[in-house]
Length: 361
Image (cartoon, rainbow, N blue to C red; front, side):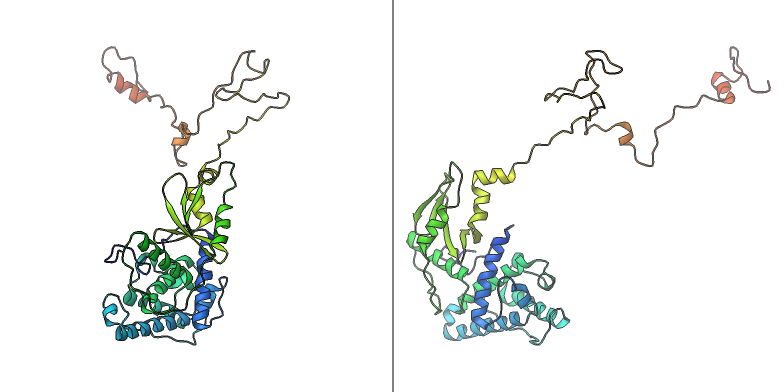
């Protein structure tokens, strides 16, 4: 979705539902866990991300805080609020709900309903109650929570580091295209600047092939990859090197797995299938068959001459007659010879020249 100036807003974009690696999902959980810990003082880490939120109490509390921030924005900046979709109502919550109870499921269900109705989160980024409670789809839960944080940042709430990096890249694109700056974000704590020197070292040490996949630095945090003119934005998120891809993020390792020809070849080329070797008979060792030729028997083997060759076995894709028939079918037997009466009728039923005789005549 484009804004009126033609640049996709960071708060309007969604993390694409990649078939991502475990590292990609872990990096996002790390970022969201640190963000929630700063906002609400939760005891949450990347490894306990779903466990800390499975009762839904923290999710409902966050939804109510976002609704209050939207109401304050509407009072303080009505001209800006008219351009945004603001949540009009919060959610009911049972803060004493225990994990695995119906009260916890109700809390999670209320948060999901609020995301759909009040925030307008797209279905591709939504999750269901079972995805969080039973860990059926943690990725969609993480993507939905990040999208809520992205939109809430437009109301003045603190944003995760990934969302802040998106806004920085958007502003850099505006400067390069000589476009007017976007709306200034509301006051929020400043973010520590990127250590681009460390980034250059981490990016340059990724390819170890004899002919390296080129990643040429164009400016701070921007690289040209491969032999094309494709430019990517690269940032450091704690111990992860992240690549801005489309409307979302990917790890550099996973990105190179999809674009570096050496990595693609090693990941995608199937191994050649080996045909089963013939089992030698006792006392008759057989030489290794040459490609494209059937194996020949040793001279003097039983039942053959010196130059005899074993007949070719049927190919696996050419089923025999027995393979065509189902387990309930048996091979057809040859037709039985006709009985005396049938032979007498076929002969003409006693006409002149008929040699068939009925029994008793």
